[in-house]
Length: 229
Image (cartoon, rainbow, N blue to C red):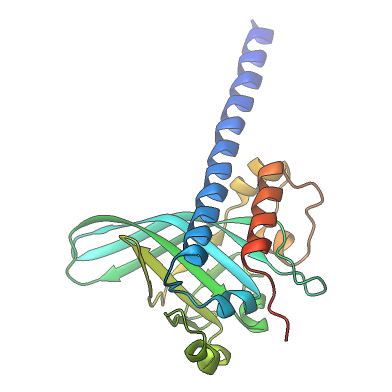
């Protein structure tokens, strides 16, 4: 009897783990789809030069916004950071994002959210297990438009630029007060070890990257190579 219970528990554990990994793989696929659509769109609403100079990128595909007079946001996403020496994006760290908004609003809406980290201070903010935008680090609505000249004039002024997409169009938005947390459960399910976001992004402790992660990194580096001066 005890052996039967033991085997049931083992099977249940691997079943739950497999489902969690499929969810993580889907988050990576959705994140890559968002980036693909940004950089391959005719109008390229987010300037390519800005993405090419970003030190890190955070993507929250299908972020859910819901509420009435007090609204909320929740979503799962990933972060990837460039290596200082190679300029290549590294393995993804899984994150969660929550936030509140106030004012008249009805119903629920799914949006894509992208954050471009432009400064060293912005990078250092990722060391925290819990990051509050606007408090721990400045976040600004990002410049929109295919022409990069406008972005070139202001890119040094922002630490993190934010963009959201609803109904197909990207726009800069303000996310002051939004909280981003390291999703250690998702990191464990994906990598098989407990990693905080900083372990993956800053300390580069991940040695074995699953195939879906390798594909994500390869495509991201192809789409957003480091801009060479």
